[in-house]
Image 1: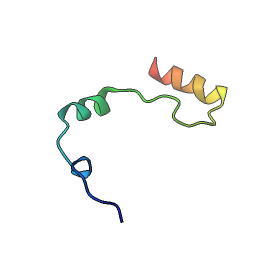
Image 2: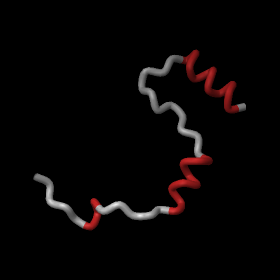
Image 3: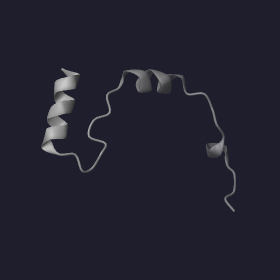
Length: 45
């Protein structure tokens, strides 16, 4: 069984919400085709 440490305790990270709401996560799917990438670029523009 895993020993609980301070790092496993949930805490508030106020900057995290801002990053998640404004960041663009691209190419997270390893098997993306060129067509998929072109579509992403088109949508982002």
